[in-house]
Length: 123
Image 1 (cartoon, rainbow, N blue to C red):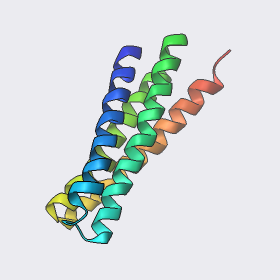
Image 2: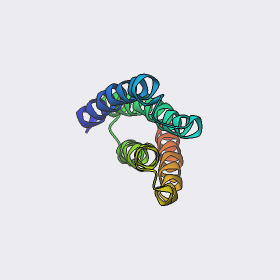
Image 3: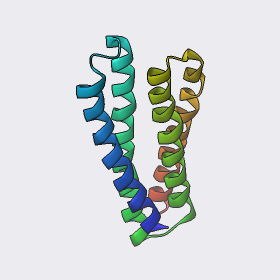
Image 4: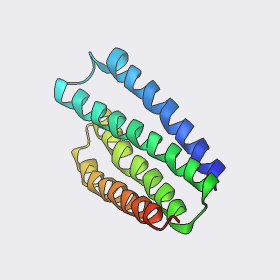
């Protein structure tokens, strides 16, 4: 599983940087300042959790555990739901997509909780 988390980390990091650059250069004239800020929030959280996935992958190499894998899955789900819904909302203009975003935030929180419990149990 460590390899999966490390690969997902690199994918999330790469796409986070690419989407951030796309927003800064390609979408700046296309989106309202409010929507541009929403898009940037998506990239910000994606990049933070790309680093969190890197930590999960490294921890999984050293001490594989169920809670570590759970944290990785929840961080990945959070990126998809939180950041993905913000990207979709800004690019489509469908405000209803915003109801998905809090579920991604909850996945992030649960992922941090699982990671914290995994670290607490380290010997």
